[in-house]
Length: 81
Image 1 (cartoon, rainbow, N blue to C red):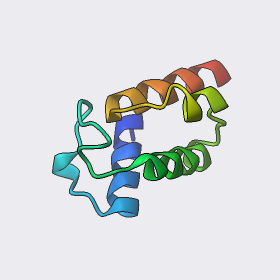
Image 2: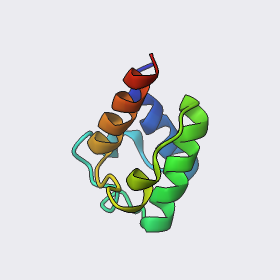
Image 3: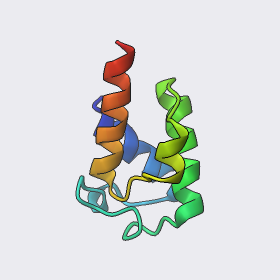
Image 4: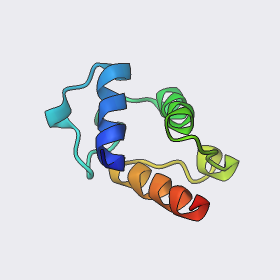
């Protein structure tokens, strides 16, 4: 399962979104996620992927689209391998 598919699956399960509405260019806001939901999503993704997202990603450089979340996770995962 790709990073995108894992994120999509989590968005469907946690927020009840329709998978057909979730695309790489979908903004998290357009999917109905507020800033608290985004932080919750990032924490859930840390658990799912077994990684730690640096505080700067949570506070200053918060991803705004699904594609940005995928890029963030892929970059963090590649550093761990």
